[in-house]
Length: 140
Image 1 (tube, rainbow, N blue to C red):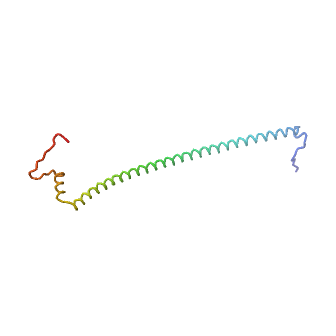
Image 2 (tube, rainbow, N blue to C red):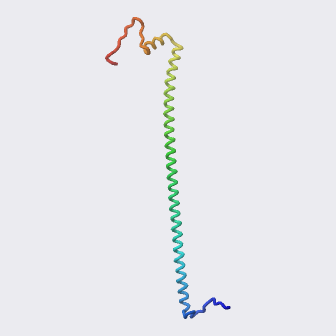
Image 3 (tube, rainbow, N blue to C red):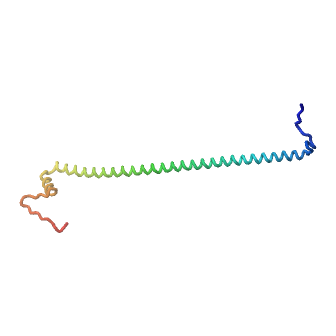
C-alpha cells in the first residue's frame, strides 16, 4: 500500500495550482485565528466579569465591615456616656455624704443641746414655751 503525503508543486488533484492550496491554507489559518480570537474574547469577558463580581463582593463586604465598626463604636460611646452619668451621680452622693459626716462630727465634738434646738426649730417647727412666732403670709 502506498500513501501520498505531499503534492508536487504545480498542478495537484483536480488541476488546481499550488497557489490555490496556499490560499486555502491561508484561509483556514485566518478562520482558525478568528475562532481563537473569539474564544479569547469570550475568556477575557468571563475573566472581566469575574473580576467585576469579585470587586462587587469585596465592596459589599467592606461596606458591611464599615457598618459593623460604626455600630460598635456608637454602642461603645453610648456605654461610656452611661457610665459617666453613673459616676457623676455617685460623685454627687459622695459629696452629700461628706457634708452629712461633717455635720455629725460637729455634733460629736460640739454642743449637742444647740444642735437639738436648731433641729427642733428648723425641721420640726417647734418653739420654746413663751416664744412668739410670726408667720410671713405675704411671701418671701
